[in-house]
Image 1 (cartoon, one colour):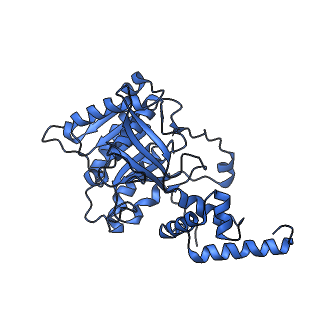
Image 2 (cartoon, one colour):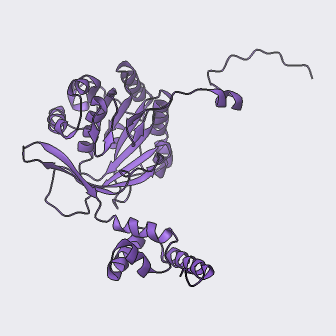
Image 3 (cartoon, one colour):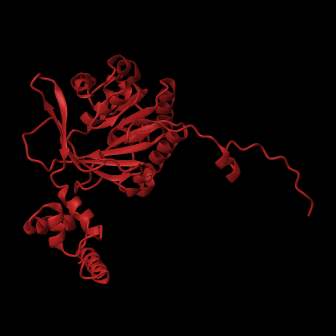
Length: 342
């Protein structure tokens, strides 16, 4: 067979050999907000209505745009941010950003004022077509605006008002939105997408396919701690986190309160139901042969250990069978090591 000498047009796709890949000196990716989000990464923030997801999002926008600190998360320097809002009145956005500015420690207000840009549906003329991120035209619009603004981060608040899909529960309906999130990654632009919780309140709404592109998925649930109603109060739940372990990546009760000076502040403490996670970690460590030993190590009485075990099983952190298997293995190790170790 004669050799085909047809000239094939150069492909726009980059392909590297293993040698080339290992030899490449990639610049380190910086954190936009350490340890939560790095350059080019994407994050989903989901919650039921009314717990304060937009308040948290706007606070994060201020921290990232102004190089500040929020809830123990820090932006080492200011970054450029484009916030796309699909429903809130622009006057309310103005009020909330003014209200939340004092809650961000160390923020450079001038840098934030320059770096944070807002594209709000309510700020447009009646005839203006607002971008739909599930359409090619809408994606091009947001990407173009992000590049014009030189944005390092795009905030999308929220899925329901920014993406017109036929059925959120249909996996195929997510394809256009996933394609857009991947286009942002290719452009090295980080993204935070705000979404609503499902009917049970245990996860985000719609098809699980939406989760595939995110490095971080953070849920906000109604707070486990008791207290008066606040403008924002929730318990953080991390269902996906690809970064290194960090103390702030744990269930925490968070509340937006008013200080004695009349300014707003974020108050944070370990989640009231985090005992279930502590109990689970102690059991699965394999260091204890009985529930009583776990209780003693955690400084609890046996009744609290029993209640917390039931809570851990209810939250599907642990099963009865898992616990018995781990306890049995721990007891066998103790017997093998001799009575002096038991």
